[in-house]
Image (tube, rainbow, N blue to C red; front, side):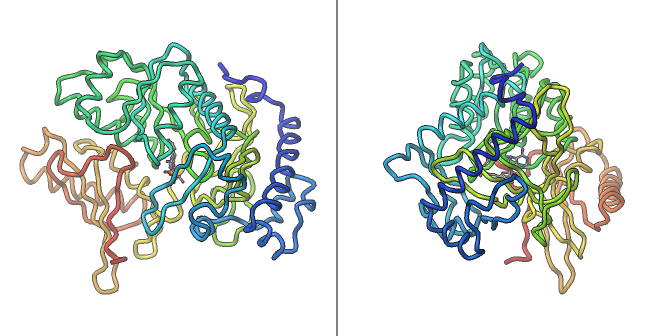
Length: 433
Ligand code: DLL
């Protein structure tokens, strides 16, 4: 099933011809309208006209999050304010947020791409979409909302929070599709249990989860606890919001990135060189149709790889693999690189613990220490101390064996680690303090 079959299945040569045409147009537009781009292109001696093939994109300089911060709030906008109909911002963990603006046409494109994403995930007209992404400056809520309406489904704009009420509404309104962060979905499962509501009795069929890294093991856990098919959706406010890429329900093997609007590249984050198909590195995206704030070679800092292998679903658009995290989320513990999602994958595989955890990094003298706080299942917690000690040692050993990092596992009582209604916070790094 497709939302826009013609564009979703465009043969590669036609798709690439369209990309080149749109790329050339956007380069002219930013060069003429955004002083930042005129300056950076001129500094590297490049005129938009040097781009005569998609490969030539590599000649252009990158745009970074810092560039967006430096031009806070509206400096990178390519359209006059009179044409901007919506403003979103991402809550940077440090300093000022990153601000993005959308023209009417941008909102329309975003809605179409989110509608395509819904269909790829197995949703359709007639579905009741329970949208628990946060509404507000965060792009998740409104992005999914407009997409659901474009699709013609019935959207429940419940936003995040008040989890008991969420469960009641899902039950009473007959929600068939759930959209929220993966961590929030697990919190819902937990609350449902407290309320005595069995997800098997609900009508939910598909969950569309994203906005934070999660693992394949977490997917299995969610599918089991919520009794639905869990689909991974990716996006970022700088590029658009949710719906930049999504898994198709037919394959669940990588996320199709909508290439008629975005050109993806994978680079070595240290050297900036483009990496060949299949290699993991930092995802760089060029937006080729955006009007409000087009970005050229934007460094997402997300780590993934890219494949152009044809997909069983019939979509011709490239796929990115599940994100292993952001290059800036990567923890370096005594020289070993680890992503929180890798630790999560180990934890979720261990019987007797819950998928709620917090990683605490400290420095004692010159030595980094990692403490993995994880909740024990209700039935185990009352057990003897010996059992708990054995479990801690098992966690420490599995993390050491799988990831090569030494840690201390600290088991905590059920429901003591803070739950999230949006993006989960998984790491406390005291080394930076
Ligand atoms: O999180 C947009 C979004 C909303 C995506 C709802 C999916 C669903 P930002 O707040 O700007 O935008 O955060 C973007 O979140 O660079 C990634 O690091 C991370 N991220 C988003 N989706 C995924 C995913 C929204 N599926 C940042 N897997 C991105 C891993 C993800 N990380």
